[in-house]
Image (cartoon, rainbow, N blue to C red; front, side, top):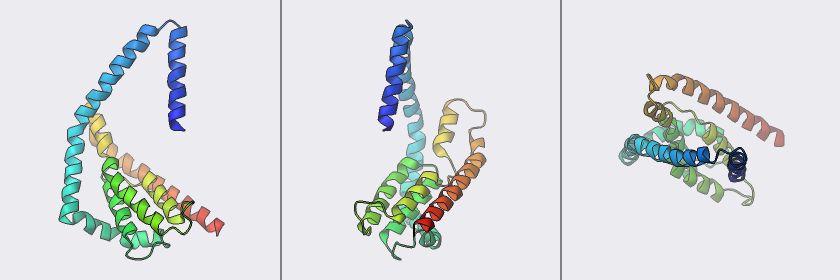
Length: 192
């Protein structure tokens, strides 16, 4: 659906540009935005590679598993339908830990594995289970302690203090997580 929305917005912009006689502006924007996008990717890549490398070292050394074990008591309360010791809880904990570092792209494999494990224990294969919905809410609103990607973007755009976003990001993601999980809990309770 989002592809359709973006496609319609782009088509409207191009048609408007053609009708208003701004075809040169459209051509210039297409060329310069492509270059800006590529430059941004190339400038952000080293920062993301460093953080993803650190997360891989943390995973291989067992540090990520220890962090995941810290989350088990909370996750068992959030996901009561998931049996104790199920791999899904480990993947969910790893996903949360990596997301806390602001590395959504590095957390994606853990999220996909968690959903696979949750689907394996889902009694109704054609519908998302309560645990799957809760994980989606948690993953979407997840608490971010260090918004690495945002800090990188701020550095690339010449921010005087790119890390000043950390406290507002923590506050915003904590509020989003509490709100999302509370709403999830209330809706789940109402449907029982």
